[in-house]
Image (tube, rainbow, N blue to C red; front, side, top):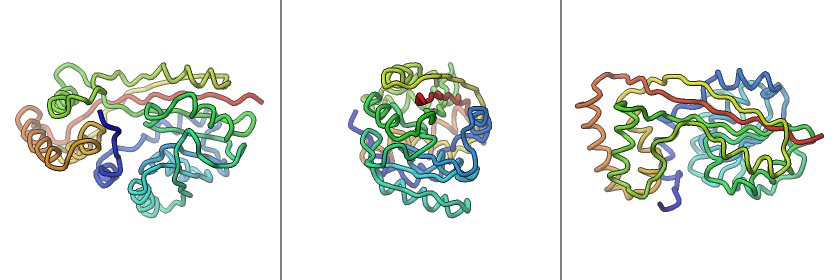
Length: 256
């Protein structure tokens, strides 16, 4: 599959993609993450869902992303929420930011796009001694016969190069580069929840995925969306849908 360009999906991404739930940040409080005044860097910030949630809790937040289109959407969402995040353009493996500048570095729904070891080494450099790295995911769950499974199969028919279907929402491989880079005190946790999506919103959420508008031509996206809408009407008439998701998080400390 071609490298996804999420800038092409920026409007759908901002409008329809559910952000991380407050329950995640409540859980992270137990690790002293999200404290007022805490300096936090959010890698691969996209439309700023993690960055904005930390800013709402009083953190001083920098968001980093390579897509100016996504950052434009993030700024608009921040303004609507009444918070301020400083955005910089760049990549997680080489941010160009000063060493030991942050108490917390986060990466939400993006670590799989990084060179894991290079990003982990960069996180170690950016954190103060004793600082914390958080890698988190918020994944839909394809279960036998459910709307997620049906939508994934439709993506695969329209984009055979897309290979991200069938996930379990758990990412143990992320522990490897984090450990090799020198982080310690690694803990992981997960929890499940249903997210309500109208048919329109679920179509937008799927369009915003890597397998659809981020990689397909506009004509192919339109053809996919029309078939997706018809499938939802026929097979999943409930509106809104209750879409199962899993939140998974890894928390690790820099020694010191």
